[in-house]
Amino acid sequence: MRRINSMKRIFSRSKQNDILNDDVYAEKMHQIGVGKDNRINRERWLQKTLKSIKKGSTILDAGAGELQYKKYCKHLKYISQDFAQYDGQGDEAGLQMGGWDNSRLDIVSDITSIPRKPSSFDAIMCIEVFEHIPDPVGAIKEFKRLLKARGKLVLTVPTASLTHFAPYYFTAGYSKYFFEHHLINNGFLIKEISYNGGYFDYVAQELIRLEDMAKQYAAVKTPFGFETRQSILSLLSELKALSLSDSGSSELLSYGLHVVAEKGKK
Image 1 (tube, rainbow, N blue to C red):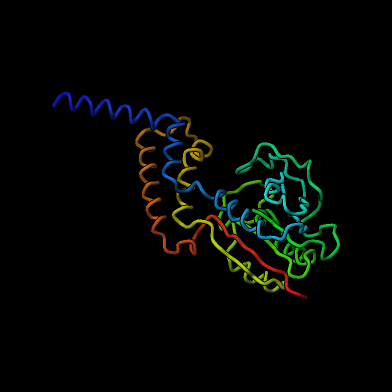
Image 2: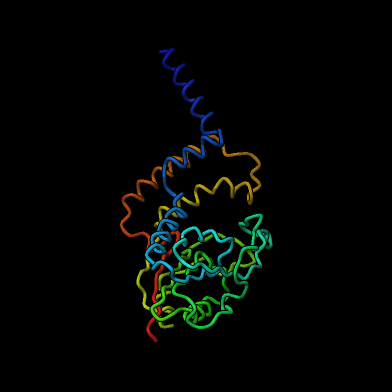
């Protein structure tokens, strides 16, 4: 019996040491497989959607930033646009990138006034940009002006988000009702509105961020202890199970929306 108890203590200490190791803890969260797929889902959807656009078509990447999605447009004539004011530091509030490269942009302008003739583009994509636009309806109107008849508009937006890229951050997220209203009222036909993730995925995403947020905003100087980290891993496992059996929580909360619309004939 003493030998068994001794082995249990050794195993318990070993398990604690594993979880207290930052790299091991991060890997365990990754292995659970919930709350980490926001970007993966979005980029997989975007790559598939862009692939469906006819080869040789001219596409505008509106709010292109560092051109991270140009790699999915090798079959297209790619033109990038951004207002090029964000420098990676912003006003230092919320989440910032630290550095930012605006040097490769084709067009530097306001997104509501892009210096190109009407009907210049076969397609426009605007990926995770709308929360940074003070006049999103003005942007929709400009996209309509720039697209050819039956041109394709490809959008992704958060439904909820933390403050990021401030001070160029004007809303936390959008609902599908915003696009159903404003796209239709501006002459677009909606081809797709789909959700990225659901409620349980979003909660898991923020639970994964908890330790970093505690260090930044709650004066926590040291990493979480074993019991807290173990509790987080247990909660993530529960959220994974709930995500797998999810039957529609995305209508309540999700990472974001994927939208495809087509400009009408007129």
